[in-house]
Length: 295
Image (cartoon, rainbow, N blue to C red; front, side, top):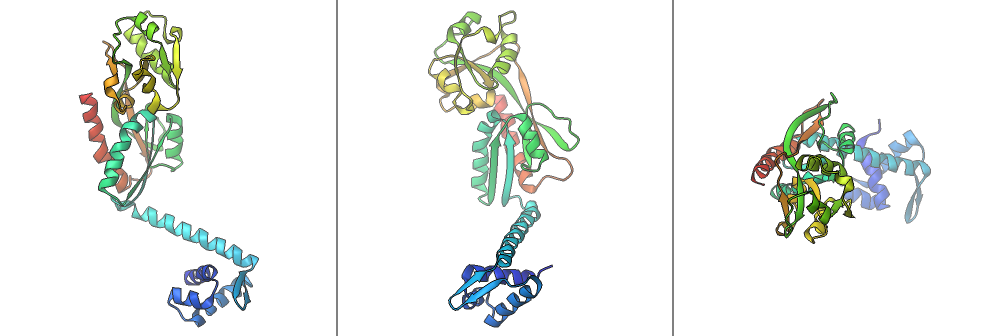
C-alpha cells in the first residue's frame, strides 16, 4: 500500500507544478518533497519529467494522479458514513411520490434552515422507482403508497392521504351530469385515481373513460391550474391539493364513501437509521398527521 503522505505530496506537486511552492504548501522541506516523489518512483517508475520551469506528468504520473483522486473520494465517502451519528450535519436523501413530496418540501426546507449543516436531497418518483432507489442505497428514506413485502426493507405507517374530487370554486357539482359538463383534467395517475373515487361517489355511472378530457399534465404542481381557471375538474391526493398556492380558487367535493390511501415509510432493514434520518422523521411525521386531521 502506498504511503498516504507520499500521495498527498504528489497531488500537491501536480497541482503546484513546482517543488518549492509544494514544500511551502505542505509545510515540508524541499528535500522531503523530493524524497517522497523518489519513494513513489521506486515503486511505480518515472512519474515526472523535470524541466527548468515546468513539471510534466508521465503516463504513470497521470495514472497515479487519478488514483489519488479516487482515494480522496473514498475517504470522503467513509467520513460521511462515519458521521451518520451526527443528526445536524451531513446529507440525507428522501425519495417519494409527488403529492406528499409537494407538501413535504417546505417542511424539509424549514428543518434545513434550523439546522444549516444538513443537506437534504429530495426526489419525486413513483412507487417502483422509490423501492429500487432505497434498495440500491441511493436514498436512505422512501415513501410509497403500496406496502412492500420485501424482507430487506423496514416498513412503517407514515400518514394517511385521501383522494379528493377537486372542482373550480365557482362550480356546484350535484350529479354525474355536472362532471360531464365540466370535463376531466387528466394526469399520469388520473384515470386510476378518478376510477377508484368516482365509482364510490357515483355508483352506476358510466365511469371516468366516458367523461370528456379537457387537459393533461404530468407536472403534479400544475394539475390544479386548469381547475382553478374553470377548465375542468380532477381527482388527486389531498397533499397535492394542500400544496396549491391558490386554495380560494378551488374546492373539494366530499362524498359519503371516501378513498383513503396509507403512505408507508421505508428504509433498509439491515442497519439502523442515521441520526439525520431519524431527526427528519421525528420532526416531520407529526405535522403530517396534524395536517391530515385539519384539512
